[in-house]
Length: 318
Length: 279
Image 1 (cartoon, each protein chain N blue to C red):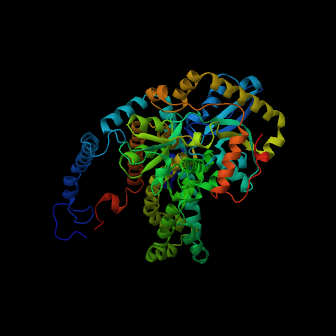
Image 2: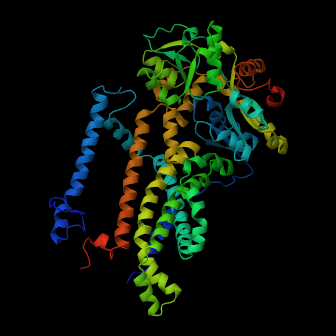
Image 3: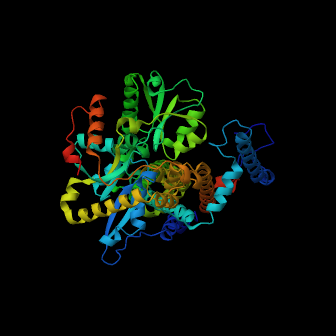
């Protein structure tokens, strides 16, 4: 045989060569800034933190904030627990559930709050225009899509059904990612969807009907999500987290006061169509969590059986 | 094998020197025709209203989006990240599988000892390891690597084991009687026998590795094509989602062509590549 081993090694060598000329890690420390990593989702809700980086609210405090946009949130809580993220963004129901499962998470600031207006919130329940459903109570016996089951979507939609005099246990929820909802609704695969922006805008634009604003039905000032970290991490570096919290609060206040800025920054980190960005309903961004609304959510979670007993909210809330 | 047919002889099947030359030029042509038919179907489906255009844009719109994006730096950055995870993962899996495969292939007892463990681990889908990967490495490139290596390793490893086991006893005995030592026998008998198997494993692993590299980014959110697809989905940029999917397909084809070229080069002495029997 006349085979050169060098040829065979060429296979691995070629692969290694490809590896050598690919992008390298960018983790250099710039001056005296402390590098902090935050886990976020590339959605509308986190516009304030992108604005905060853009406006220098973090760098002013000596923080070099790196935003890791993990998808769908699957990596977020584990990321905080493992220390990969110094802090992150998640919805309040997920945080309460995680806390009940024994994960020592604690909120830093509010994340995003319901716009508070019936029929004009950043999320709602939609049906086809020619559907027989007129109110949330009519959802009894029908199938409603939510992006996650036993989470904030179905919990608040059940509250809408309850508030409208219906039986929430008679509503059948199925899991469907937000991006798939407009098509699933239109093709009749599903009776109703709980969707948030920008998909809510797409659905409205297609001429479908909004029958409930589930966040508003739960609490007009509903704190939907929060920025949070691990208790250990917080105890390790209280000064750094005081700075992070202050920067987050400034970012949230800036976003709350400058909706045009929110729409501008959305064009930089999302792929949402410009026209949709102009038209869609923005959430509100108060810096403080509305404790009462979180209590309401926690009570609903107990009622619906997401958790067994009344959670210790004092440990979770700042 | 091919018994009566004369129209489409398989290489090495009907041993006529001219047959291969005559069928070969048609293959790329047929391939192109296939692609054209597929694109036409894609263009027509939304345009004829079979599916709503709003949720499934015609291919012309998707290709236009792809062309626009291909002119921007972030596009190539994402491609680079994906290729990096793929190449590094595949390389590590390749080296590990070859070393372990040869070592265990040469030691039948140890091989028997590990068979049940391998059979247990092998069918575990790489994606099932995502929670573990995230817990250990977060959204780091190492998460992607874990998934790629796990998926690729078994494909190559099993092929190497089969290859090592396939050594012709007569060749082995001949080598021994010529006084070849252990290393020389590996070099001149075992290695050439295993090589075709190894290349098959590499080819399978290259394709699977790309899938896993993108899946990891899609689900975990580490940078790359997968993450770009997620961002496009979250922004309801449907044409862009499909543009990335096409880009992924093109990448897959390019990788496959590359590995096949490598295979032909490395195995140019082998009958499967020469396309003629040694008679």
